[in-house]
Amino acid sequence: MLSSEPMRRTSRGGRGGRGERRSGASGRRLAAGPLVAGAAVGLPVPSSEVIRRRAEPPQAPRWGRAHRYAGALGEVAFQTAGAGAPPLLLLHSLGPGYDSAQWRPAAEELAGGHALYAPDLPGWGRSAPPAGGQRAASYVAVVEDFLHGVVREPAVLVAAGIAAAYAVRVAAAHPQRVRALVLVTPLGLGADGSALAGGAGAAFLGQLLRVPVLRTTLLDLLTSRPSIVHHLRKEVYAAPERVDAALLDHHYRASHAPRARAALAAYLRDDLGLDVEADLEQVRAPVLLAWGRQASAAPVGDADLGLRHLPHAELEVFAGSGDLPHVESPSPFARVVERFLAQG
Image 1 (cartoon, rainbow, N blue to C red):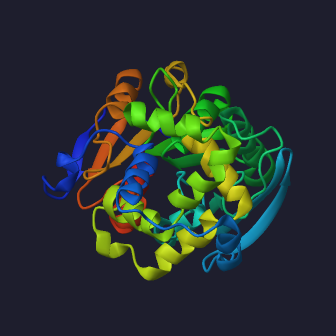
Image 2: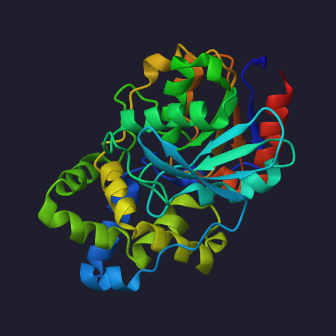
C-alpha cells in the first residue's frame, strides 16, 4: 500500500512570471475571453455548413497503442503504453479540442515504469457520448466502468481540470480500486460543484448556449482558429511558443467533430460540474496536487480547499507551466509523480 506524508509546498524552479498577475478566474474564461475578443474585432465566422466541409477529422494518435472498449455507457477509445505497476489511468482536462493526446508528453516519460491507460472521455476525441447524457454522473460512471472493465486492478488516477473532481468521487466511492490520486490543476472541488468561473458574463454565455438557435453560431465562434489560438496561447500555456501549428491544427480538427461540439457545449453550460467537497473527506488514498505557477487559477482556492480536507496531501508547483504542467513540464512532472509513488 502507498502511504502519504505531510503536505509539502514546493516549487519546481523560480518564482514570478505571468501567472501571478493572472486573474483567478478559469474555465469559463476560455469561453468569455475569445468570444468578447472576437466580437470586438468583428471576427468573421463562416457558416456552419462551410465549417463542417472544411474541418477534417483529427489524425490518428501517434503514440502508444490504440484500443476501443465497449463500455456500459458507450464505446471508449483509449491509448495504452508502457508496463509495470501500479498502472496509471490518465484523465484529460476539458476544453475545445481536448482529448487523450494531451497526455502524450507525460506518458512518454512515465511509460518506462508503469502501464498507462489514457481514454478519451465520453463525447471527446474518438469516444462516443455517454448513454446517460452529457452530465457529470455519466462521466463518473464511465471512469468506474473503465477501471473495472479495462484496468482491472487498483490504479493511480492522474486527472486534470474538471476530471480531477471525477477522480475524487471515484476514489471516495471505490477506495479498493484507487491506489493514489494525482490531481493536476483541479477544477470543481468547491462546494458549489462548479467546474467553471468567470462571473456574470460567463454565466450569461452559458445561458445562451442553452438556446438551440444560438448554440451553433456561438460554438462556431468559440472553436474558430483565432479563438483557439487565443485560448491556448493566452489562457492555457505559460510559453505561447509551445503552441505550434500542429497542436493548433489538432485542437481545431478535434473541436469540430459533432460529438465534441456537444460535449464542449455541455462543459460551457456547466452541466459537467460536480460537488466533491464532501467526497474529499472520504478519500483515504495518498494525494498529490500538481499546479502550474502560471496557471489561470493560481495554486490557491481549490488547492487550499483540497489541502484543508486532505491534510496529508502534497502540493507541487511547477514554474514555467500554465494550466497543463504535464504538457509543458513533462519531465519534472514525471519525476515528481515517480517520487510520490515511491513513498509507499
